[in-house]
Length: 87
Image 1 (tube, helix red, strand yellow):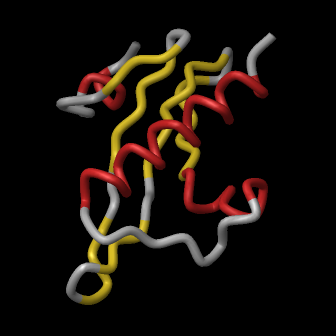
Image 2 (spheres, helix red, strand yellow):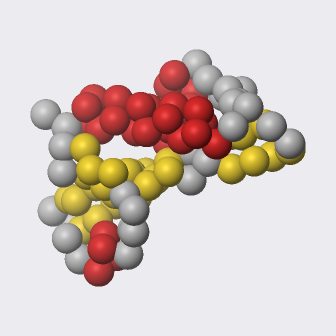
């Protein structure tokens, strides 16, 4: 992977793709799950934001009370997207 991929410090890897959680708090005890998936393609690395795919999981309005739960959901969603995208 190139330097952009290496810039993701603290990522989790799943099937050769890097996942970086980016959940954020919108108000006290209300966290929106989000993650960035970095896919390596023949044309170079591509970023996919999990929140952009929330409608695929019928979860546009999903929130959590804390960051840990939000991050866990975001990682699980990212892994599901990767599993569906890769052969």
